[in-house]
Image (cartoon, rainbow, N blue to C red):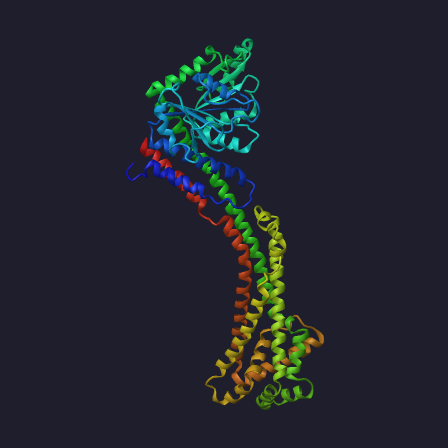
Length: 566
């Protein structure tokens, strides 16, 4: 296919996409997805890329199996030399031992195969490493690895065994007559079947009188499990001779392995089978990772929606609190009364509209303290409203996240911190409200600029006129009743009539609308900063919205590259 990506490049792209898969949210499938992703990355690094880059490298046969199956004894017996040490205590083999011909040592000394495992040629165990043992007993072209137990009680041993099996051209799977039907061996055998791995099965420690019966039963199980092509070797339970199995028991396996080493075409066929099976298995395995990433994205979207809903409700509540008149209760109402005045003076202003300009100017210039008090009361009221709604939104978000996939782990241990407004919110809200009040005064100055007939009044009463505009923003009386309604409604209407006499009706409406819009924008900005705390948690855990699509695209690219290379 013209223009197809080289197979190794496509595989590297797939590997990198899987390694980068975002799995930060504790969703139901996260752990299984992470295990699959790690296994894919390990197999690409440890086997697929090295093998594709050197198809003629020695064949790597990994001898694996359950605890106490006799793997180390079998390896020693096949080679006729003590290259690995069987153990009495369990777990036994901790560091894998790779045995190869001295001529093949360079092929395994570097990082071409299993690059993440350090090499040693000394005696003893190297936990997490790989002991390299040259042996004349093994012909060139074949290496044997004595792997840790696949069911070891030590997790690192199990993980290392799985990693080695994924790096093998050939599995030599060892089980016993007593345990060949156990779940763990068959989990591994099914994995071999799913990945198309070349497989030989050694049935060890079979009582001589039960050889035919047990071998036939296992052969039938392999056939039914889709592993009918696997080579089956039977080792009878016989006394060891100097620590080795009797020659006649290991000769068939040894001869078969030596035949693979000697026959380049047969060896290449094993490599091609495992390589093709491993590449083909990536489609389903990476699809499972993509599904897990989709689950992550869906969980992240649900969490983001919950935060949006909580803070959206807070914005709505602030808007309603500003516009429904409730902020004109209590202290603000008292300061407004002090500022405008009541009784005969108010009635006089209402009856003599022609004298409103002069009376308002006298009131505003003569009562600076009342103006300051009103501004302070308004500031405090708006601040209190903002803090209350920010706290409620935070609490609602935490409560919602506790019930959603991935949410509990994000807020665990931080409920008290995240369930209230942030420490910086109160001073930020105070700054914004003060700035808003300054903005309103600027609007009043701008509105009065160029109006010569009003310049004198504005010079006397910008603060007072601004206060009237601010109160007009909160002037809906839906939240008031009784005496409050009469006082707030009447005095607010009076203040607006004064401003209308100065600026005109349309200008006053414009001033109030612009002041309200600016306050709404400031409230939105404050609440958005609070919501960002939750968005940042999500960004750290699941910040790759297109990751699933990238995985599926990488699978398609690899399929095209495989087709072109076929």
